[in-house]
Image 1 (spheres, rainbow, N blue to C red):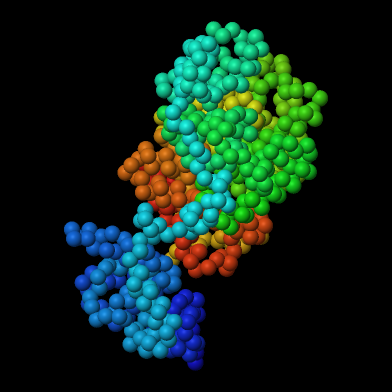
Image 2 (tube, rainbow, N blue to C red):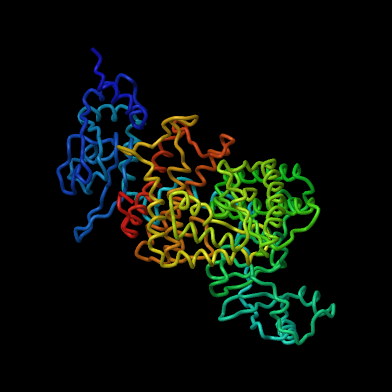
Length: 639
């Protein structure tokens, strides 16, 4: 009669080296002698100084920490063993006591492999012996340390040649900048610029950038006689100033300048106008590339005269994305460039639709991109989420004005669908009467969501709190953002409910660290990487940032990096969350490009053992940050 337990053990072992390197007969022989051992969480498999066991181990279910014991008795995790990992090899090579601890991180099932049975097989099989020697020698790596973090997808730029990817190098920054205050006259500012031989001057208040004046501004105003040279520079300055951090790349700078029709960018400490100026970048400092690169695509978008052409350009953007992914370009660079190209595509679509309407917009308005595009995380073509704010007007003209913008929004969203951005399944788009509102109506709506939050309101907040202006008057979007932060400030009840909502998708692993997959529907048995992994980190970053009143940062990775600065005691956790958010997004993008879809649903059968293990390591960040949120916001299991 067949030993079914041994057969199941053999089926498991043959999936992992070194057991995958031996023949079926030897595998069955070993499987019959394997002991199956159950350990509760936090139990020692062996301790430093223990006499070597007559067996080594492979993880069947669960996880085991390998710990170094310091001189003061404290322990430090130096490796983590997941499904299929082997450990406890010392008795195979030397009759010595263990030098480290092995402790279960959670409930675990281990297979104990008798050394007496396995050693003759290893000695007779060179490949098996070499694998065990390498595993034994390398069993001190710490995948969670800052230096040796186990990377799901490389964030190193060493895999591509700088010459072939020059546009991704940091942009040259001029650190010797010329500044003045808003009250300075045009005459004085011009003399200062001439004396310093510069083409621009930054206008500052309290050492923060509030505007910029260039030679072009002088030609447009003073040279034409529109203004006197004794007029304050505040009358001609461009404001607000477009700001970035020092990590701005050449490609991103080119795209930004073309998008905003500017030739200077201000570099500040954190990339916003709220911190100290570090330098300035001008168009003359940048080499303009020729060929099929982001700059050329941006120019093509701005010149596109039809939706059909924009669709073709968007397909070329996908090819560019594929090249970046294949070259392992850092995700930070990829997301910023893709955001600018997506943003420009939407902006050009809006411009063309306005041109096709009989009359220009009756009042100033702002088109907001929501969700992943609002967070600068939309790499693949996914569904569109957007909203529209228009300037306050007299009550008698409100509905007439709304009709104009609804008509515009329907045209825009229809063309975006043609380009490849599908309609939002929940109709959270500017063409919806509920999301095409005046400035005051939007303020009132957000106030209602925040002061009386139900499940629907919290869901809407999670979408509408992450937005970026794509087209129109930035004062409307900034004013709305200020209103939101004022409403949320010190509102512990709302933050607690939002925090509870951030826990609605728990860690993506179930019992014995198995992936939680879809139970029914078209994606049955597939892993939903968006709902199970990316969204929990996004939600956590949002609520923690709101609690610190962090403005002007909506990107998930950047939110966690900012939190690492604000909470030094949790720096390691937040940096791990930042890394995990980028790694998971890049992983989704790889699979989306491979399968020509959104990359949301992953067939686990397509993943290698290494991919599964490294995904699980990213999931640890989700569990840790959710545990922090539970404690900080005092979330009860019944809330």
